[in-house]
Image (cartoon, rainbow, N blue to C red):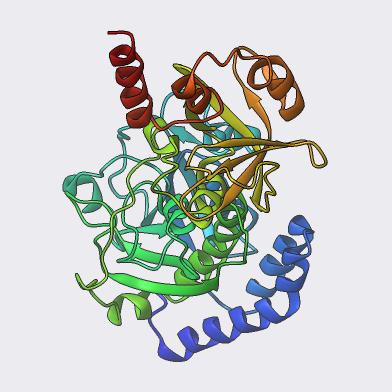
Length: 380
């Protein structure tokens, strides 16, 4: 099947022409026009026709499925047939497949023998057994949003932002049984992480990049397989799922930059959290590092100290190396910084020095336990 070296070189040159003529259109946002241009360029020379089975679930996976679908026909693109495996529930990949009349399989799929050349896995979340992988003559490819072996695991984009990586990218690997994200690398593309980028923004960019790198890899798959390289252990890191427990701020330990990265990594899905007077407060509308001038210059602010900034209507909170601001909070309901100050901070009765310190301060969970014990001891 299309192993002629001259033909393979023609595929690579075709992709280069495609990138020059339509990538600008894609990055400007006219993705449908860009995909049509991609398929027209791909059809300008002889190319492989793959019978594909796609495994995916979320919006990141949909980007690759969209591009494969655009290239699916007998006269255009590199996809001869395309069918989809997804999980139960109303997931984005299932909705896209139904809207575009793609045959759907439940997990695990049956009736696979002899029907497909290659599989494609994008953000699927289930280990594929060896007996299934062996049913695909060209194996199963995976589109992964990191430069493997860095950030193996289910949440590479979030950890890229959380740890302040300046460079990331996408990897196309072959699936290996028993473990996630350890297969040989067929293709990689680097990407410079923009300053102040959020996980959602980075994920959208890498989804588009990954879709195009997948097409490029499929165009020269035999050659890529011959030149594959195994992943080393040097630089390998794990990216576990994002959990609510990660959203708790530890004011005395985290810097302004660390809190900024935490917000950009998880803030759109899990609000940052702190404790105040024994209650959980969710911190919303992060404004970044801010300068605070205290009216009482003799006061030495400690991490967690809260200062209402009337001019900007923000709550400034002291952390390890400075102050960060939030425009609103969620207590019983959503409150602006002014509402929280007027309704809670300003009106709180300050009975003694300990309470004065505690009532104008946010705490980590650990800190709240310590203050509770101090209050208890003061009453003895």
